[in-house]
Image (cartoon, rainbow, N blue to C red):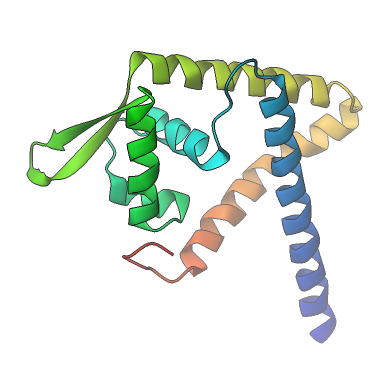
Length: 160
C-alpha cells in the first residue's frame, strides 16, 4: 500500500512539474512571437477568460483565476484604461459589474489564440505520430484529473 501511495505521489509531482513547465514555456514562446506591446501574463489570462465567459463578473473571474477579487479589480482597471475591456453595471445588481471585451480586446485575444495555436502546432510537429497519439489519449484523463483536483480544493469565497 505504501508503495502505491509513493508511486502516486511521484507521478503527481512529475506530472505537476511537467505541466507547469510546459505551460510556462508555451506562454514564453507565444509572448516572444508577439510584435508590439505584450500584456503581463495575469492581464492576458483575464482577457482570455472574459473572452470565454462573456458577461462574467469580477468575483467569477477571481475564482476561476484563483486570485483575490481586489487583484482582479486592479487588473480590470488596467485593461479598461488600455481600452481592451469594458465594465458595465449588472442589471440584476447595480453594485456589481459585468465585463466585456472591447473590439480591440477581442482582436487581441483572437491574435493571441492564433499565435498560440501556431506555436503548439510547430511544437507538436517535432514529435512522432506515436508521441502525438499518446498526448491525444492523455487529454481526457488530464481534464478529468483537473476537475477532480478542483473538487479537492477548499471552497473559498474571498479568493486565495
